[in-house]
Image 1: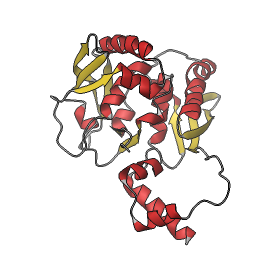
Image 2: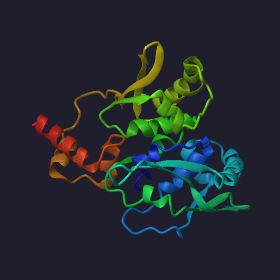
Image 3: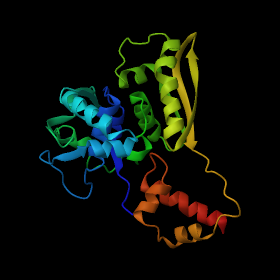
Image 4: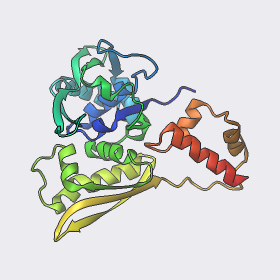
Length: 280
């Protein structure tokens, strides 16, 4: 069985300020899922995605995916990303880099296919990631119809311990909402509640949240999340899974299936070893 496409992003990119439509995000994430992590990548590599690919991922009709793919491709070239670069020395201030996602994008008429090259500035945030990165399966977000839901899922996947507090101003900046939905009531109605509902419906996570006030003003949102509870099966679970974990014979695909969103390989190995010890 073919391994599911995985999305790898540096944490700086996850917390970058940008706004993409759902279809634009699907194109970008489908191409990120094709980036090789076992070899040097240059900005000359072309990544390809078709309307059929997107329809298969999202569950939408191919005809709808065909139309949206072309419209999204035309917009992607103009989309900007604002990335904060931390200073390398004392006394230096952070720099904000404004760059684009793609340097070149092709739409192939009659094939319903897009080809794109990532910008040279974007590649370090997608390749050669040894630390401080977020990883999840493309299928975790592919069926979401909320662009904010996809972004919020990534922000939660950064924290595999299942708890994250986010300053409301930071979340507004990351989503590039500027002055939209200034009241917390409108923000919940238009952004937060739909995003959480999408995560709970379409992703492997179950999420709850609460607000925190500073004085009388809501300033922070606290999210609690974890893997959805599997449907209980009749009888006792077979011991074979645990024995295979102890023997270290799990394939990469099986490891990816067992990994929690945002969990590194080292954390996954430690958790599985602990589980095996507890069973014994």
